[in-house]
Amino acid sequence: MANRRCHRRKPRRGSRPLDSGSAEDIALIHRDFAEYLLARHYTPLTVEYIERILLRISAWLREHPKQPGLDELTRPMVPRLLAQASFGCSPETRMRYRTAVFHWLRFRGRYSEPVARSWAPWLSDYLQFLRTHQGVGQGTLEISEASVKAFMEWQFGAGRAKWSGVKPADIWRFASHYVRGVKPGTGKSRLGYVRRFLNFVHLQGACGPELAAAIPKVAVCRAARRPEVLSPSQRRKLLVFVRRPTPEGKRNHAMILCMLDLGLRAGEVIGLRLHDIDWKLRRLHVRITKTGRGRELPLPTHILEALRDYIRTGRPMNTSFDHVFLRHPLRRGYPMSREALKAMVARAYRHCGFPSTWSGTHRLRHTFASRLHQRGVDMKPIADLLGHRRLDSTNLYTQVEPEALRQLARPWPW
Image (cartoon, rainbow, N blue to C red; front, side):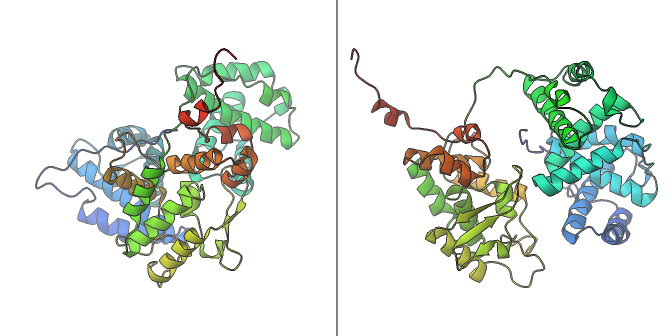
């Protein structure tokens, strides 16, 4: 799913800041509502994030007099409200707004719980399986939940899940309904989530493999686009730019090296903990990610030294978090977020004069794989380093320079 920034119009001169709300809303959110969330075992970091979202919504409501106040919201108002307040935001951001508003409605006693579905245990067990055994992120969990709910509502309504009565023809009818009016790529993604759920049901022994096999495969007729990788000169330029003597510069340099010379994903970088680094054996433990498998990576000397330099002389002290990479100077001591990491990389691209279309961190992971492949490393070791289960996934990451291919061309005729 493509990541799109939330485009907000700039505030007019003399207007209120984005996060400003009424004094009553601010006091209630920071005091009683925060205590309500903490009592439900949400971390202080999550509570602070939810507070910021609600303050933004409160400010937006005040700027639109025709909208209800924050203390007047009810659950039926939420879809239309968020469609306007989060216009232009990515689906992940809209989902976070929705979650924050629902927390607020529960706190205010205006959230009516949906009717319990008899098939709900299947959904909760599947999400727990993804969270515990597959290591998927929160965004993937939310998308999976939406797709599974759509299928279960279609097939069973509010009743009990009777898998013995589900036929492949039912799967085809649902698939036709579920992908109607969407682009082929979106349809393929939606049905993929349902297929994985049906495989889970088969593993539980509730149905045969024919149900998952009945999910049609959507053809996406477009050329596979690989992100352009960094050239050796661009790689050096990026590392020179981010390597600064400041604590923030030391952190950015270490994070860039983890992606550029270890092939870590953005989520893996921000998920690193202090005890994941084995200083004696010079190894890095990467936790279970979306592929459902963790891995042990050797730490080259230059990366090991960059991590040691940041942790000893740059990382904020006296923090309750054990994440390797923390924020500073703003929100000092809190863990880095995926959005903050991507924003840092995007700023570095711009300052280095890279193409204006470049964004995101996955380009660095592609660069890592392509450099190894160009140096003659086989696909299997590259797949192991990237954490891929299948070699065809690794093939999308490896690119060969056209000039290198010219040496393999034989003269014509031969």
